[in-house]
Image 1 (tube, rainbow, N blue to C red):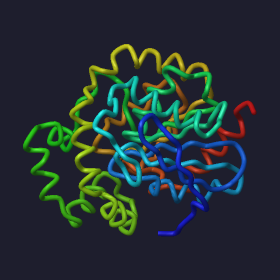
Image 2: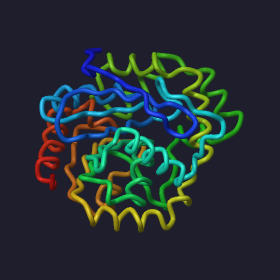
Image 3: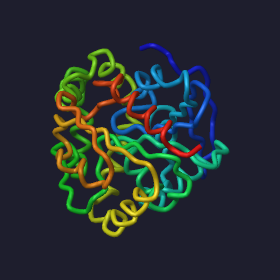
Length: 272
């Protein structure tokens, strides 16, 4: 993979350090990845945005180079607190936020409580609604014993096949790279995160999120061929939606040119 992040630093978030990878100068754009990714999933976007934006991409707790201590709070309050510690540690008053999948849960929890810290919000495929029903792999991971067995038998061909089933235009090279980062520590954290989460936790938070979105410039960039989250979810955030009819769960990998243009336009239209 091309290395687009020119520098990195470590930010103290609670009891552990979070690595943050950076490129470019300009308005601060914080990018929160999902499962099973690391900050690397954003490289195609950052390559297109770093000439005008200060791109900051951390590894979420338990992914990539970020630790996940046993006492890490997996509640939505804990998610929001981690992002707040990150934003404060980066000395950012307000931030343009782009979020995806698990990172969308972190980002939307933060937005629900700290809308005043948002300069803009871009939501890639993710959910924050109590009527959501888990997809097949989430149900497997949430089941004690079965989840551990699924992680134990995971291999690169299966991983790559499932990633490209979820995102039909995800480059094979990226899927193989993501597999190389899917360590046993990450797999254990995936089981822990999915077992701690339940869609009913979003009850009430979804109302706060919609109120927060109403106070900032926001957009939804949605891959319609996502088998994990219903396409109708895209319209529920109360923000303009750009549908990517040929893309799946990973729009930032599958359609980076259009996604980068949409983010740059939103940042440019937002108050300084």
